[in-house]
Image 1 (cartoon, protein in one colour):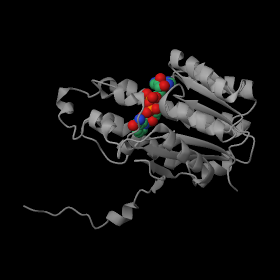
Image 2 (image 1 turned 180 degrees about the vertical axis):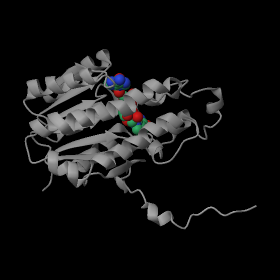
Image 3 (image 1 turned 135 degrees about the vertical axis):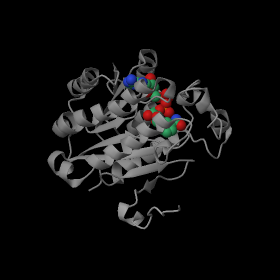
Length: 275
Ligand SMILES: NC(=O)c1ccc[n+]([C@@H]2O[C@H](COP(=O)([O-])OP(=O)(O)OC[C@H]3O[C@@H](n4cnc5c(N)ncnc54)[C@H](O)[C@@H]3O)[C@@H](O)[C@H]2O)c1
């Protein structure tokens, strides 16, 4: 049965700007009952709440100041959501930063934040407060998570780990217990403020590994897509994507599925003794 967006409630982390805010708007256009924007940025969060209320009507949105790297703050956003809207059906773990110069913080937000959200959603709030037969978690990876990246290894590592945890949670064992589907998206270069992050390499030595500057990427219209295009595909993923699947969303193309090869396919790749 197809998952319906109409009448459902969503919690979106990093919902004050960029992809998160765009997802909120697109879901509301598709009949969402209400959305919580959980973000560390109070100024943008309050502004986003005002804009969404003006566009979609009152009682459709709440903003909760949240640092996803702190489990208690994240849980507070879940609590406020079910208090205000009565239910919770969709969690989009979207909050993230792109900055290997503060890599411990990057890991806390991108990876630990996504893990906090998935545990809280799967084991408690989505499991217990969903309205229909199932709830959905979308974890935000990146095309940077599909292979290593010399210039920003930690960012790429957090995104690779998000795919790994998503695939591990997204199986029939956990689904039968919780009725929560877990999928991951890997956006390509998308015009949001994250691309304005400067001095984001671990050190000057890592800057030399850039093969393409971010400014060139933003200017390249074939490469850089809008957040709105990604959000439209996100709606299709929420409706149709199978549990545990990973979806690439790049260059304004329709989402396509990324599959890890089976390790057995590499059995012939043995070391040759060359001495
Ligand atoms: N824009 C791209 O090119 C691109 C590509 C691939 C993946 N992504 C991923 O998409 C997600 C959204 O990023 P975006 O492009 O919309 O950038 P963005 O900077 O516009 O949005 C990120 C949001 O996360 C919030 N945030 C940061 N730290 C937080 C914390 N500790 N707790 C709660 N909220 C926090 C920010 O305040 C901001 O509103 C990120 O996970 C990013 O890694 C973006």
